[in-house]
Amino acid sequence: MKNLEKIINLILDIIFPIQCLGCNAEFENLKSKERWICFKCLEKIKTRREQVCPVCEQFSDGGKTHQRCAKKTFLDGLWVATEYKYEIVSSAIGKFKFNFIRDISFPLSRILIKSILDVEEFGDFQDLIMTNYSQKSDEDEIYVQKEKNIKAETIIIPVPLHKKRYNWRGFNQAFLLSVYIADKFDLDICENLLTRSKNTRPQSKIKSIEERENNIKNAFICLNKDLIMSKNIILIDDVCTTLATLAECAKELKKCGARNVWGLVVARR
Ligand SMILES: [Zn+2]
Ligand SMILES: [Zn+2]
Image (cartoon, rainbow, N blue to C red; front, side, top):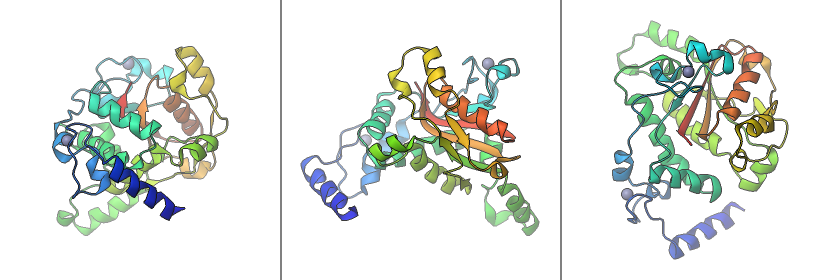
């Protein structure tokens, strides 16, 4: 199966060589995951300068949910890396999701990382995601020890796909992004902690906000409460629209004792 996939990719590469989604150039000397958005175009993508509250979408320090909006969601905040309106971003997400191109997780993860590190001041979200991330060389041993204790506190959970959709697509795009983020920030991924209990319709195919909320309601179940208790959780997805999916995940995680639940997405539609 793997070999067959390789052969198909090789043939596809000859007929339709990968062109950078930004400048259309072909980079035969690069690995295929590096060709979808070349380094120059990646550099040019602007990350979001000002984060907003996930509920009212008004300015909020570092994407934290306003106190006044907190009764409407279980999400403590949402970090959005860049803007969906940038053509290169929307076409990369589209190809990732609908054309089944796994390698696009690589440039998208670079955008996520850039947006997290490339800010003037680190806020609550950075505190959570960077608990284990530091220049280890100038830390003393006690500090490293402290880091290890903190490590257990933040975990990454990719927004799960229903099995049927997973089988159809062959991968969960949120999980592929999570792998790069977990690696960069030295965090653990808990892939199978949260599961989809019902096969919901794709949110992107439903127009009304109310219908989207009903569609996703109680769709997630946490399989191991002990692993969630008192943890800080970063929920990762490629894109979010109405917040309904992330909010439902957060609801279930909070019910199981999670301390903080933040969302992290490439863009919001
Ligand atoms: Zn390019
Ligand atoms: Zn708000």
